[in-house]
Amino acid sequence: MALNIDSIELLKQHVAGVMERADHHAKSVYKIVLPLIGLVVWKADNIQARTNQGETANMIWFEVVNKRYALVFNHIKRKIEIREKSQQGKSIIEIDNDTNLGELIDIFNTL
Image 1 (tube, rainbow, N blue to C red):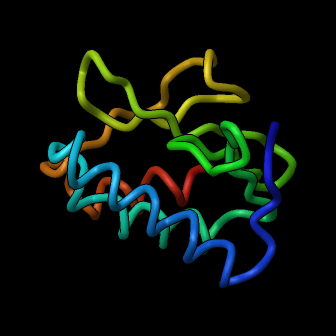
Image 2 (cartoon, rainbow, N blue to C red):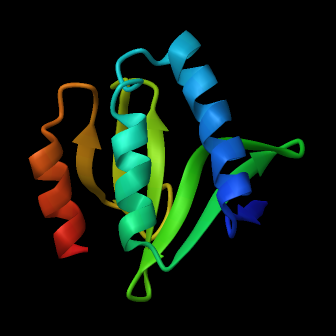
């Protein structure tokens, strides 16, 4: 199930959960989460968070000009991926703490 992220308060709640989980289980992406969320907010027309047992989970979907993307944490690679259409879609980019912010901005400019 998905939760529409349609207010700053919901976004803050979701990001707080992601940051807490990343701090414990995904240090490889902890530093890039906030810039990445900022880019999503900048470009997205619609944002939804995956839910699990009533709580938001570490995956969001967002739309840019009617194209859907998913932000998914790849547990094997320890990276966040932007995927086309769904969590099983083609990976556009793999992101971790070492990802260049300029490169991310360029990617978001092409979405």
